[in-house]
Image (cartoon, rainbow, N blue to C red; front, side, top):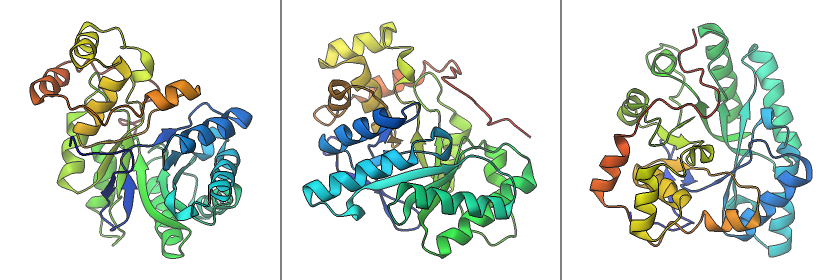
Length: 282
């Protein structure tokens, strides 16, 4: 784990490589989205997380294209993620996928996720079939889900549809929301876990356990939380809006938390929600 680098990747169940450290763009739009993605790429990030819901696919894609042209970097070296907003029928989902591919301007999407399980079993399966079909056509390289609870994942895994199992489940994961049931199920079925709020949205930067570890390792609270996420085996996608913080978040590859500290952080679980949580929806 100590040998991890900003460029390190994890192999997904479909054989594709996914960078373990990425840049989240939730609540960043327009010029802010373009600028921050540019800064992240300049800082060495090669994984950008967007979504139809964020309304910034165009700006994220343009920032990637402009960076690649300026620095003679192949588009294939940047892992771009987007997500489906609504589970509202096979044909509508296919159109939403096509629009996301067109809006980003990148030719294809490296990882496409169903953003949430809302809509019921049929709607979820219709969406998954549409996503799987788009993958077969080459529009999507890897496919997965987001904010799915165990029973939502079981609908796919235990179905007789013959559809592939999701490669990734992106969900709210951090020491204050450990989701042991989801983590265990994903590990049992080779579904990579991705933490979309590894920094707890700043809500626990001053927690005594976090500040104590920051002092112990000579790091910032944010860096302790990000290192925890990486050592748990999660793909982590911190968001930041300043160039300074974007760079600071990458300073997590020159130290390693002791296992006893990881275990202690795991005991902090309080079911803390940093945003929405549809994991129990019908």
